[in-house]
Image (cartoon, rainbow, N blue to C red; front, side):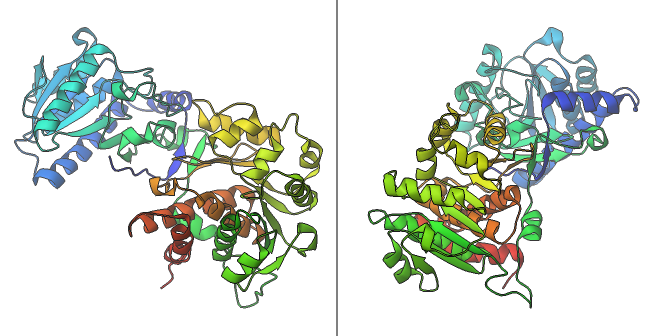
Length: 498
């Protein structure tokens, strides 16, 4: 399934329910469902036109559960039936089907069926909504299996549209207990606002293209969402750009303390990421100095952090090792009173922050701190792997460390100690290869050195890193070197450069 998510604010189910109640109190009965159904029907009609050239005579199956999600689906089916669509409803629990929606469907010429028809152009997943939990129940699973058989035998038809979110996923976390018993949608049409399942966790791989329908919920939602999804315009607006008065020092100096004599690539890749960023100068400190000098002649190199000179931010960790020399270098960057990115081996050396030998230095470091763990590294410093709720896991670690946490994954989460949380929409499978994290850490350090606040630096680095990964993947198999090489073009495109 292709994946694309709409940028914006993300809220949990309880907040959505509260906002819906407040909004409905201001509207005539049934208005909110009518708005949702109208938006859903419009999106279905557009998908039918795009694929088949029109809506008249197309066969649409409504797979309908109990409750309001089924009601939205039935009312949308009624609107499509009025436009000449052959709308059929498969009721998974006929006694609990939404009465008003079912009446509207029948009045518009739609029919109820007891089995999945052999000819279906589009199917709507109206099984459960944001209140659903756990995998599909047997009747729903059987219906979706029947649709899968139709799809396999009929040229990838029908198109599957999930109503609000794919059934079988957890709305508040994006967790999926059993992917074989969850709906895999081509398009998800959601109402009012995004929910976590649209942007994080395994559910994102089932949602397909996510489209948000405005039903007037905005004024009734909390001012602070659980998550934010940045737009390209957000990243471009934050990105530090030199002006006529800038010089290499005022643009910021970033230090890279990574790599070793045995892992020179980590140093080169980190410096590559930093060089592509907005900082005006890069200093490298470490055993890979001769190799860095050969690859990046403009970079100032030294053998130790203590000899590197002044910087506005340090990046420490990847390829550094965990021996006494590496520990000494980590202590050196922790003692510096500048912004800091800890990655890879630095996180391994720190270990569980509750018992770490570096705990006092971490507590005394009052400048911005960003840690960039993948799941195994997260377990080392947090005392356990991220749970099903990756957002909450990242927030807990951010509060514990007083650090911004960039939790890597298919949908990278950035969580700050103050509770501000972002999710990156540009992640690409091509980035799951060795060394790409080194590039990301270097780019992030450059953004910090240029003066960007930690959370914006972290999400901006992840966003552009994802764009570079996608660009590299369009040219063939991807290495970390390819991602680093694609960064300047991705940044130029983002900023509107030629």
